[in-house]
Image 1: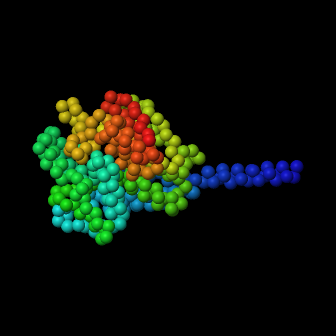
Image 2: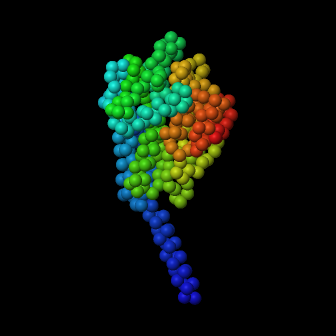
Image 3: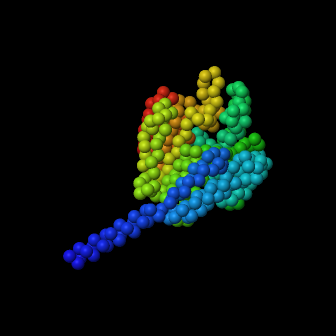
Length: 325
């Protein structure tokens, strides 16, 4: 009786502690616009003040990265690289050098399908509502002459980056926001955030649980908007989606996607969206962007190189393909 009573009391104390801990956890949500896109930050902290403080620090971390990687803010390292294309190398912070080096490696892995030097096309294809006609094939061909990761020269000795051709540009518009999500997650874990979700306009990373349950993320189906193709339960994973159904131009009833094939200078065709799930948002974005251009059949070879990642591809005919190693 005495032993049973002690056990019962111990169980009640433990349950009480766990339940009170659960109740004391607080979710803070912060929406902000950074890096040219909308971020939603969800942080679970031990109390309300901690959660909201961490959410603000998360936004500050994203802003810090924006001031490293932006190609439209004039004084960032990336803008300085672009401004000095064909002139001189630019010594950059290690963080910028490292992500540039990874991006060049991605270009080599994909055979140039993923190439941050595609940015010279931004004057040809504009998706801000200002395009009034299709670019000519001559203009596209001229712009593609400034694309080529082979002309992106990295010197690890002095940590410099050089674009060999005048008129070349690099942009982290693709993996930059995914990288920001990954780095912010890393910092929040270091700061003691119990769990969280960083959503960079569809590039999402998660850690921990929400209300003792995994984070639930639905994969959008643009052909059946109210019915996701799958609902995923994420605990410590990332998910990114690339698609042609939100950012595009329309001419003669034909849609031209904002995802440009660097090898041709023309928008991707044949695929409506690609969602990739895996450990790291940056890699997920690399794969979802590349698979939009490659399509399902050619994309199989690429996804096999990343055994911890899986992809859901929707063709422009509405067919769903599940690609995994």
